[in-house]
Image (tube, rainbow over all chains, first blue to last red; front, side, top):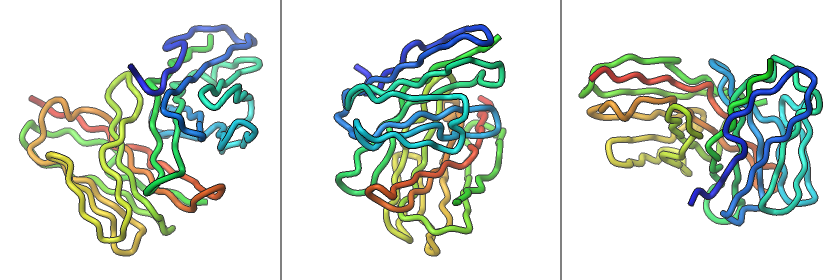
Length: 114
Length: 113
């Protein structure tokens, strides 16, 4: 079973709709992240959370919000979707304990906003 | 903030050839990571480097943490079709609440059988 899961894997929505992307992890990591990926731009950080009570904006947080419902769950919302939010979205987790700190990614959600 | 310059942006090679890609920055990093993203999937960690000068291998992959701590390279030897994908470097600074990971824009690798 995958350690980091994302639902849905694909989503088509219309401009102005509110949608939520969900992420769950079984790795027991405290830290979770949301990225978006656009061709040629790599991975850009939207929001991150270092524990259940912690929420931080990343480099491109405008138009997005997040909720950390539990250690294992971190959801990303688009309050009013717009076409330029069409992208591939990834959730990731990390654990600050031990040597170094690497991030582990989910399989991604492909979002199309019409 | 930190920026990573990853090159080349794309490569088209023949099966069996060796591949080299690198990341450079004007900033110092504590850790360098190399990820591979297969089409339609999330990035998967290939190699993690924790010390300046460290050279680490994972099968046909070899990566090095530059002595200056501002660069890293990844080599793939004897490429095969399943090496196709996007390769990302990432550099980490800080720890604890100051932890930050910065990603390069990726190298798209195409391998012609």
